[in-house]
Length: 257
Image (cartoon, rainbow, N blue to C red; front, side, top):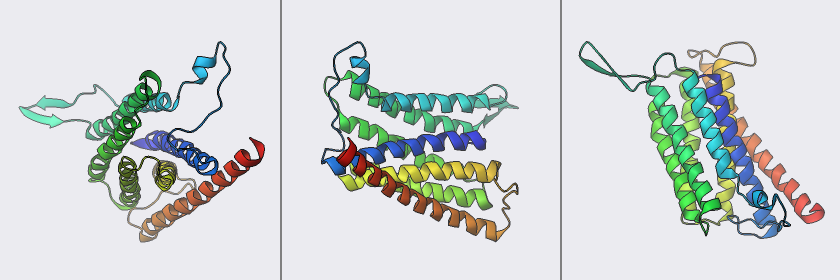
């Protein structure tokens, strides 16, 4: 996820995915529905009836992963190869780019599993979807841990906080395999997805397009300390957003819908 776009686009994907799960959690808790299979009104028969019954979350995952892969490949100068041999030596090239692509492809796989399970199988297989989701995040963790080896200062601190949040998100989606309809787990999954997304976007602005116009300094302890402060503000903002989504959903499903 190098460069400004490499942080912005994945951040948007995580954030909107978290918003979707926050809406599912709110609807399930208010209407007393199983959160995995939210109830929906039956559609009337017609030309577009079949399209309206399609689950689009998996398709959106695939679309987002393809956009991220295209964005990553566009920023690579020269031939995109794995190994080059010069002077009888083997050298690996584009190590960060290969890590990014591995990360994106794991979420592409999760999207494909969602599409097959939700739209093609005779009966939806939710454990398969959850397993693919847990696998994608499990793949992401070691990639992120090795990704920060050549970073320092502000960038290092920002990515340590990101890894911390993704580690908690991975634990939540693994716990979901054994408790798929526990509302608390879905609430935490929505919350952590939005924290990851908003923080990724903030890191992109902080490292590449600082809003103040002044570059963050790696040798300034004040800058490093404020990275953590801003992260805590993201956590608080996401908690407030979760409360707002639940409140809006309560009014919508109890008094309007």
